[in-house]
Structure formats: structure tokens, C-alpha cells
Amino acid sequence: MNQIRPIVELGDPRLREVAKMVERSLDEAVINIISDMTATLASTCGVGIAAPQIGECYQVIIVSSRPTARYPMAPPMSPIVMINPTFNSTTERREKDWEGCLSIPGIRALVPRYTDIEVNYQDTQSVFKTINFSGFVARVFQHEFDHLHGQVYLDRVESSLDIISENMFQKLYVEKKQL
Ligand code: NI
Image 1 (tube, helix red, strand yellow):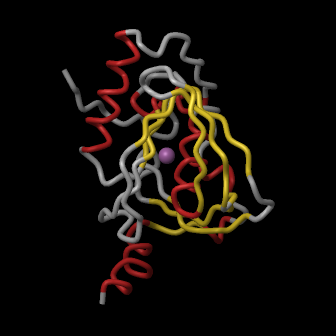
Image 2 (cartoon, helix red, strand yellow; image 1 turned 30 degrees about the vertical axis):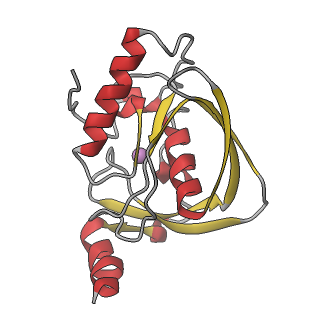
């Protein structure tokens, strides 16, 4: 059964571990983690989730860009479950844009990310896949990938001046664009 799990928040050591590789992606335990991640993500306004955020330190993420109250400008896509993902940037170009994290409520910050990447991963059938992402979706991927390596987006912020409150983010960047 799909279960909505509590989101692990910053300060919990599980967010600072390097997640274990998934050896057998068809194992029941892995299938259960993925369905709980799916249910948990669907219960939020997030656009991605990593297994450590529900307390499971395995290399599994879901990238699921869609317009939500947290990210009204996010392009829609079918959610992709990625097991043991890796990536290479296909450009030197990095751009700063706003990120938030379900594990760090109340805060947004400008984070530099590669604009174009090539991602390798295994799907839920254990099939190896390659996919290219750009822009916002590339950003979501890199954010979730960091969670698998004990990092959070605040680690990549270049200046504390690039951090603002969620309320101010909503006022400055969301409400204004909806007028
Ligand atoms: Ni996050």
C-alpha cells in the first residue's frame, strides 16, 4: 500500500549520508520505497523527491516538474523514477535561479546549476536509460541528485544574501507574476 511518510528535515543525519546504491531494483523493499515516495510527493507541492527525504538512504529520486503553488512556472512532465542516477553537464554554462526544498521549509535561495545535462539511470524495470534535461528540469534533477550524496541546496548558495524567506519569495516572485 502507498503510504504518505513524514518528510525528513534538515538537521536529521539521514540527509547528510551518502545513499546506498540499489542492487536489485525489483526487490519488494525498493518497490515499496518508490510507491511511498510517489504518495509522499503527491501530497506536497514539490516537484521532486529523493529517498533520503522519507528516511530511506537509497539512490532513488523522482523528478516530477509540474506547476504547483510552490513552483507556478514549472513546466509539466510525466514523473520519472530514477534509480542509481548519474549525470554529466553537456555545457559549462551555469545559471542561478530560485530553489526550495521540502526538507528545509520556509526558505528559498538562488542556486547555480548547469543548464544542460545528460542523465544515466535505471528505471523501475531495471532498464538502463539516458535522458537529456535542460533548464528547470535539469535544476530539479541536480537538486535531487545532491540529496543522494548528503548535500542540500544551501550548501551551493554563493552568498547568504541569496537566501530569502518563503513568504518574501511568494510576495516578490509568485504573486507579482500572477497579476
Ligand atoms: Ni530537496
